[in-house]
Length: 139
Length: 168
Image (cartoon, rainbow over all chains, first blue to last red):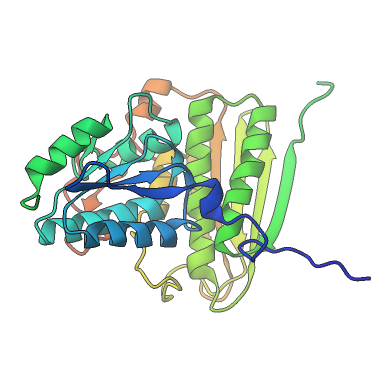
């Protein structure tokens, strides 16, 4: 009798984004919040890009909330920088927030690359939503 | 030392995106057993992730293997990430979106020692060492030289925010 060997990402297995969710929260109205939780790297980056595209397509401001994220790599930074550029080109605000107690696996890469003022990164989500409303022309 | 943790771990797996998190898990287990500080573990995870991602994205036209070796000694942990691919440089990225180009600069800044070996047709090996005892203030001040260019890729030559304190 042969047993079926499960592989990552196959039907019947837990998808990477089930364990490490990326959700859209549009309860702020004119600003869509992309809520990123858990560990994110090259495996989940394509899903992150899809969610960011979806957020951008709503034509308002975009906040990426990394408060629940425990690890992000340069694939994630690449996705964030890409959507930031496109948001700016379209006159849509873009801000990242990380919460009050930031995980070392998130804070370190932002600090060492000097991207905190570039993205930009703020602490709380309400602060980020406010900042997006002022730095974009939409909404 | 009786009951000492494993001083050597070797992993070989298909060079695919889902493997990178598995390497991080193994590293976390080993670093925990070696009683590494959480800040050093965060740096190790990030550097190893970037090295493995390079293998997944750049090493092979088709399929190939990702090899990782972690060896502890009295100074710290040395991690080797290796592929048998076509060499690190002139190779179109497999991913549809161009990479940021931040991987190797990040590894250099995060590790206490770093070496890149390989050539066209002979595979690539990234060797990085992390010490148990680090000067926390100096480590916290490290920065990746350069900044994001207009093309969205990392430009290591662009006006640095501060003199590079990375590498060693």
